[in-house]
Image 1 (tube, rainbow, N blue to C red):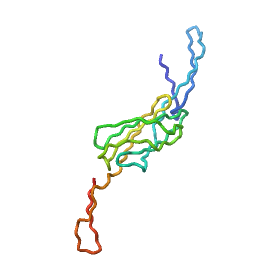
Image 2 (image 1 turned 90 degrees about the vertical axis):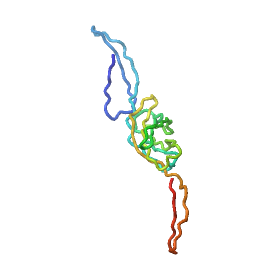
Image 3 (image 1 turned 90 degrees about the horizontal axis):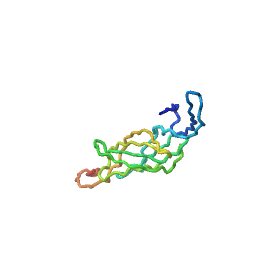
Image 4 (image 1 turned 135 degrees about the vertical axis):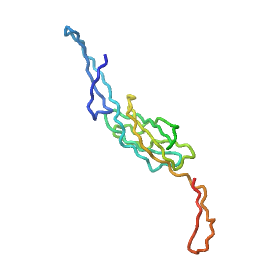
Length: 168
């Protein structure tokens, strides 16, 4: 028999202690069985792009979202804008506390994707391997280094410099 226990909103990632017993039609009951379980974490609401992002690595900051159970890590999926190839990885949480912030969630980016929009999905899982729903953000990689910047345009004006810049 499946029995559902409705949990009020606001109790994501929380340990729940339950006592169960059964009885028959003659009102004879069994002894109580005490178990502990946990709810899945709520969906993330605070994921941001970190300033240290480069053209080959995006760094995210993730704020854990409360409850009573420590956060074990993060699952990540990402794709470059307009592409269907999806990369993914799992990372352990450095700061596992329920209200901790992790500033080192890394997405390795393939070479050649500088200055590119990246669509990212993140979820968290707790010590009981229960995970939240996916949280989606869009971010960008830093531009690649300039390929060429030169003063190769002649000018007859004495107070003007002309540069030719080749972006990647």
